Length: 287
Ligand SMILES: Nc1ncnc2c1ncn2[C@@H]1O[C@H](COP(=O)(O)OP(=O)(O)OP(=O)(O)O)[C@@H](O)[C@H]1O
Image 1: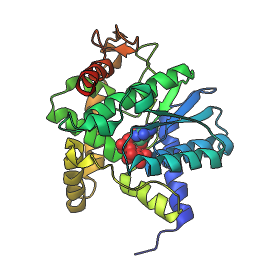
Image 2: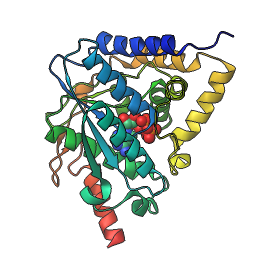
Image 3: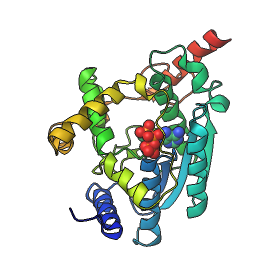
C-alpha cells in the first residue's frame, strides 16, 4: 500500500471542506463566524481550516471561538488548554464560559441525577453556545460535527422516533428565530477516522481522551456498531448519509415554531425551555 503523503492528504481534506462550505453556502461575505471549540480534534480542525480560508483562501469573514467548561474533572481542563492554545496561536478572539458560573452547577454535580449525563450536558452546552453567540452578534456557529456524528445523530432520532429532529439534518441550519444562531457543520463530509489521521500526521496538540460519561449514551453504542459495520462493509456510513440527504433535506426547518422562554427569554418551543426546566430541577435537588 502506498504511504500517505501528508501534504496531499491535507490538501484533499481542506478542499473537501471548502467545497461543502461553497456548495451549501455555509458562510456569507462579511459574516461573523464562531467556532464551538472543545479542544478536541474535530473542532480544532474546523478552526484551523476556517482560519486558513480567511488568511489564504480569499474568504471574507470574521472568526472567533467559544469554549464551554462543563465541569468534568480530569477531562475538560486538558481540552480547554488545547482550545486556549489553538486560539492564541492563530490569533483568534476566544471566549470561555462555565456551567458552574452561568448555570450554577458543574456537570459532575448534575450527573448523579441522570441515567446519562449527556442529557443535561447537551442542553446546557447548546444553551450557552447559542446565548453567547447571540450576545456577540455572531451570524453562524460552526461545530466540529463530522460525517460519523451526523449519521449517529439521525440513527438516534430514528431510534427515538424523534421526527422533529429530521428537519435539522444537513450541513447548515436556517435562521428559524431571531434569537437562534444558525449552525453550520464544515466537516459534514469528513469521517472521524480522517480527522484522527490529520491530527496525528500533523502533530496537532489536541485533546484526544474520551469523555468519562460517553459510555452511558446511545450515541456511543451506535458509534461502535457503525464502526464495526464500516469495517465489514466499507462505505456504509457515506451510504447512510446519502440516504438521509435524499430523503430528509426537504423537510421544512421553518415549520419548527419557536417562542421566547417565559423564564430566561431564550428561544424555546415550549413555554419554559429545557435549560430552565433542568436548572430548576437541579436547584431543588442540590439546595
Ligand atoms: N466544551 C465545548 N465547548 C465548545 N464547543 C463544544 C464543546 N463540546 C463540544 N463542542 C462542540 O460540539 C461538537 C461536537 O461535540 P463532541 O462531543 O463530539 O465533541 P468532542 O468529541 O469533545 O470534541 P471534537 O468534536 O472537537 O473532537 C464539537 O466538535 C464542538 O464544535
